[in-house]
Image (cartoon, rainbow, N blue to C red; front, top):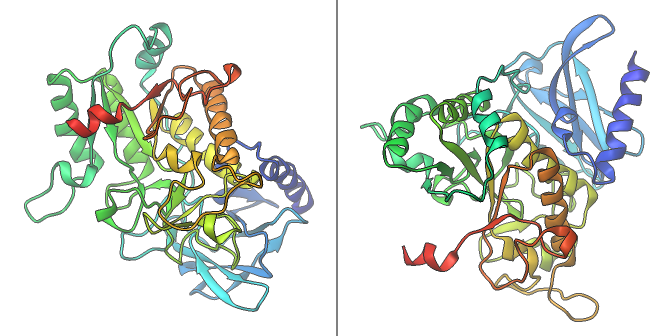
Length: 391
């Protein structure tokens, strides 16, 4: 049985390593599993340069559970019966120099409330959606025939309890959805709702791309909010940050002790302006990780649009304020970033051609909303930055 499971994993990981696994959240992270007639959890993580990886958590009193390296795929995996849903866990990674790091699960669907930062054992909710009428109407209508009227919301500050606590998604739904409906808005656009440690960042420095910020609720709570919005004729857009990520050392930064999600070139990795790290958009595995994440929000959470943040940071090698490394010919365009964005939009529209793929692009890059097959980046909308700043 183990051999068959690992053979299946290797087939999935082949796609992941070639940049073509667009639902990799079904492979990595903590997953309920039935193996050798036993119920338990399987944990899988990508740490390609690690010397060794162990699973640690509440269920093991934070003692190490050895993980098995899956061939030359760069992934490590283990099945255990001792884990329970909601338990805290991390991966203990040993690098090639013998140094040890405790890291979160990049694919975790739940985390502790900050300042705590452990991942929580959880699998993707098996939701029975009840927004069929909205989905059918969306397919039937042409998205360009009517104007969009979007209400942008920073979740934590739109409304708070008297003691300063943020609303959760259930509480927010009761107030926000009737408000935007009464005011004639067509869509709610959330600033990033993904897990992030610093509220002052407004969510733009993400640590957990596949989780909803624990201070707001759970993935299931977010799904319920989207469903309620759809029942009231309101679409939902999420801000998404695929260009750079939080550099906190417990998260994605130098994940296995060496450049993993970020560029090998320190000039390209460092984002001086925002104090973050830039994703290496030339790595196949980063393509799988990020595009899968976009599909996660579209397919599993039924969002109607994704507003891609800081597109210019992905288009120019010298967009940042710090030192930069040009292309071999001296040019400053990020060819890898361009190819990633074209691929992202092609895949997203392949899943749902009604999706709003919105670029927040602050320069005059040409053909942002021209289809990929016509030489464009493939977005179907772009933020009017001048109007946004004026208002």
